Image (cartoon, rainbow, N blue to C red; front, side, top):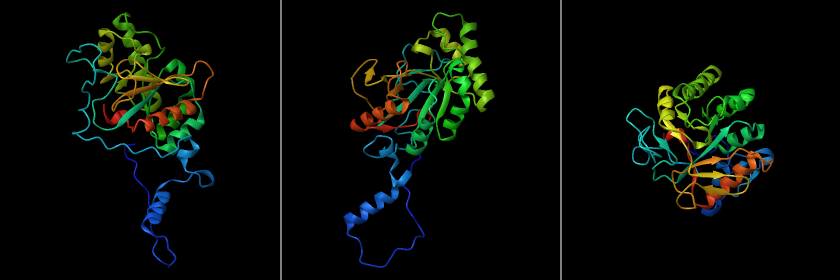
Length: 273
């Protein structure tokens, strides 16, 4: 993840003795770099991973697009309209984790994000997340990004401009009032939108409309189009649980294991858009 650096111990006395063999010394350094959790357990093991999550490279002009540049527009956008993206064109071996609505408010998920230093982006609907905004304040305090998913989760496509603007700008105002921020990123409910949505979003201060190329359900990843494997720059939606299936933590851990299996890691979406 961006901004994660290995930690080393300094200023500690070391007993005199023969120098450690190179392999053993490397192992000792690796152990010192792993932040210990409860009873000395490495956090990645506690959250169901078999190896630490690799750090994402810091974005730079050679690997990340300019802010607001379109990744894969779902329909042509005029010069004043925000791009619609489901992946980011980058050579970095990263994907991006996004979560919708805000119905699941497990305090242990906050611990997971904190201990794994996991960059996640939450797209919040006021009528769903509003009663639990304190939970999302805690998530924000450990590094989560908070973004707009409308006031009431209405399907926007086909609605008049005034109605769409009320849904989007209304949630901008709610998030400004609660968290002191006006998000730049917006996800339309159900992933449906039209040109009126883009106009309303732009007028509400949105700079990118974020869809997804893959989604994580109770057990597996599904893909909206193209290759049925993750590619660098893919935006992944972790589906809300509507079946009392695996917890948000379990679904996230399963997704992280698959990301690692495919030789990728997790980047911070806000650093690339």
